[in-house]
Length: 136
Image 1 (cartoon, rainbow, N blue to C red):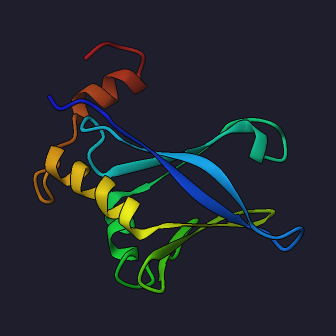
Image 2: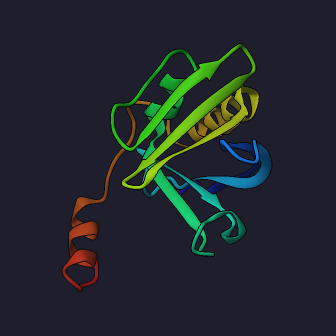
């Protein structure tokens, strides 16, 4: 099985005050969870001082490079030709981050090389066993 893919990226956190600022983030992809992408942020950017991680569909990230995508907690859209905006919705508001579209394309190329579109297979039995406290 392919190993996990982690890619450090620089994002720009968009805020109303004092304005936007660059922050580090990491995109994660693991072939054992082939439909999902995780994006993690360091604790220093959160209001409560805890690390922040968002999980969303790999396909959503891909679609968001070409046009507005998503209707739920995570929405992705292009901004010009070289930037992409991710909107992260929570009960208290919305966090917006901009990142390089080239970084996303590179990450997705590696993820689709590990597990091509249409070849995603989920380990349902293993997942159920883990959920129920057994072993797969």
